[in-house]
Length: 70
Image 1: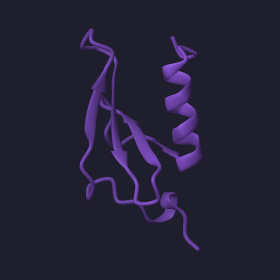
Image 2 (image 1 turned 30 degrees about the vertical axis):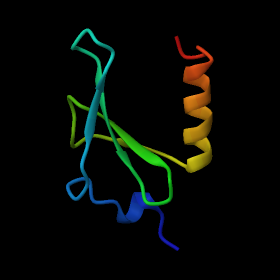
Image 3 (image 1 turned 180 degrees about the vertical axis):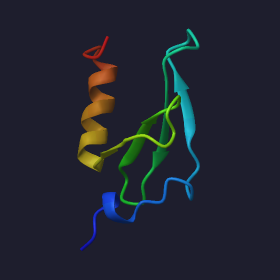
Image 4 (image 1 turned 180 degrees about the horizontal axis):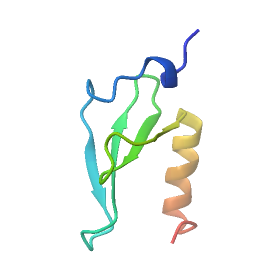
């Protein structure tokens, strides 16, 4: 079975920009069909993409809610 890394088309998805509010440090995210998500640097759209599984997504969201990433 191929992974997202092998089949993902960065140009075929809708990216949403997320910012820290100061306008300089932004990422773009897109949802994946398995419930995970992908993230990239908005200043380098052709650069590396990070892929997160549904479980990693849940842990990430929980960490944000608990203030662990402040």
